[in-house]
Amino acid sequence: MTDTSVYRQRHNETAEASRADADESVAVSERRRIAMLAPPWIPIPPPGYGGIEFVLALLCDALVSRGHEVELFCAPGSRSAAAVRPLLDRPHPESIERALFEADHVARAFAAIESASRPFDVVHDHSGYTALAMADRLGVPLAHTVHGPFDEDTSPYYAQHARKGSLVCISRAQARMAPAGADVAAVVYNPIDVDSWPLARSKEEWLLWVGRFVPEKGPQRAIAVAKAAGRPLVLAGTVQPRFERFFANEIEPHVDGTTVRFVGEVGGARKQRLFAEAFAFLMPIRWPEPFGMVMVEALAAGTPVLAFAQGAAPEIIEHGVNGFLVNDEHAMAALVDRAAEIDPGACRASAQRFSPRSVAEGYEAVYRAVAAAATSA
Ligand code: UDP
Image 1 (cartoon, protein in one colour):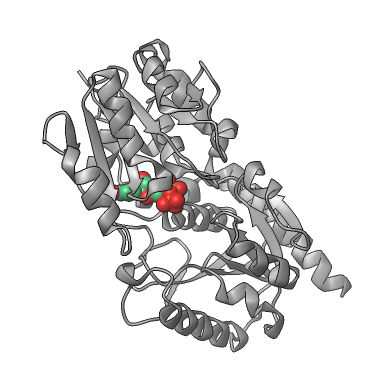
Image 2 (cartoon, helix red, strand yellow; image 1 turned 180 degrees about the vertical axis):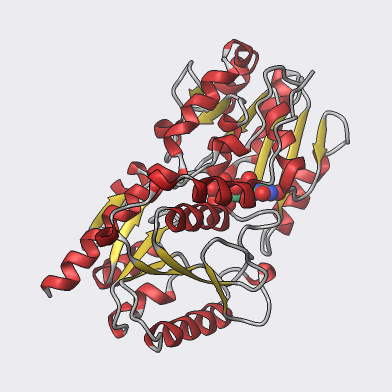
């Protein structure tokens, strides 16, 4: 039987548990006043899809519990241990990356930051591309977490604008791809609160893929792997604008409700149960995945990950310990059954190094360097 009895209200209980842990507080001289700039698209924590929003939920709670003063500029409907400062009238999950909303959101945030009654020490930006590009117009130093890959679109942008802030990458693999002129101040992994995930020691027979239905994330390859391995597959996630045709052509024809099941966008306890009960999680990526939250979520739930050795996967997956690294669908299919040899406890233990505390410590070092540079300027 699957043990899913340890579900908790992740967000609230985490914040309360952290607040109760007085030992976590940093020295008064190290406490910062931080303007955390979230994207305008999705509330924090996200009801379903939302990698950056999960990161921000945990990061804000951890920073507040460590004694920092954090104001979270974000989409309406957000909840946090930080002071919540919604900017636009509504979230815009249907318009991700639409300049209209991003510019409006960032301009309002900059106005609020500049007119704050007490100055901020640092703006920590996760909001897309507008804020970093305009950071030299702002009186407060800005740190920018790079959430996407450096590719042919974004590399010229970072080469041009990175010097206006402090760049933080979310994996070493991502940092290695930074273009000339874009200095990376630090690598800080994304956080996961392992204790808020159920650990399932016995597994169902089906394989799992969760994410955005885009070709580079490989849901179509997950289908091929599951068929070759002779196991059912559960697919969960979002079909974002511009990818409806990919979904209709490459995914939908295979969905039959038994061998391939599509369960749509998932969140909360239902999502956690999927991650915990799956026989293995498939990550057949063909792109430089900057981090891949779904990998550490599977590990937290005690589920081995079979991943293509691209992007951050080799930094997260240890071959034979918490999953397997392979180079193509054939090798992945051939190893699927061997996921039974992987210890769910070892998977969960391997996710502990991404604790919110260690991530908060990583960002504290960034804020310290930003503050020192501002003082010496
Ligand atoms: N996610 C979710 N429900 C879905 C699909 C995705 O909650 O139906 C979450 C997933 O669990 C993960 C995040 O969205 O936390 C996606 O982050 P990841 O880094 O894997 O991918 P990204 O889309 O940011 O490249």
